[in-house]
Length: 120
Image 1 (cartoon, one colour):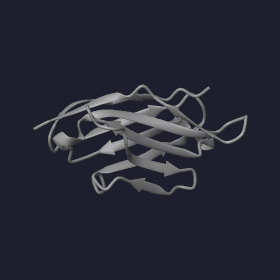
Image 2 (image 1 turned 30 degrees about the vertical axis):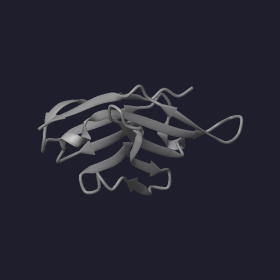
Image 3 (image 1 turned 90 degrees about the vertical axis):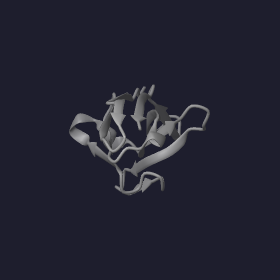
Image 4 (image 1 turned 135 degrees about the vertical axis):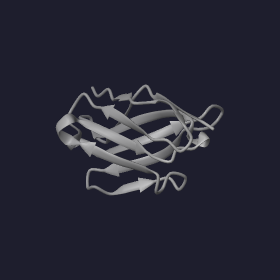
């Protein structure tokens, strides 16, 4: 069982920065995909950034140039560095880790989320 645990959210002024962390309960070296999603009130959950085991990254257009996804294998932690934050970045941010399932196929594990609030 994998239980990602997010931390690092909080209240920040527009233009500020935050770094979110996602601590995994098992090695992220075997994770197929690591990602961050967000969900604002009244909106659907949307992809923010993802990183594959091969090292390729994808970012949503609305965060390109501002957010960076990274990993620390020794700490089994995935990070999301968020710079130049905007009020529209306010949302609950979720970490997801994808692993091969022992039963075959892939399984996604989600954290409980961390609130990010950006004030104008």
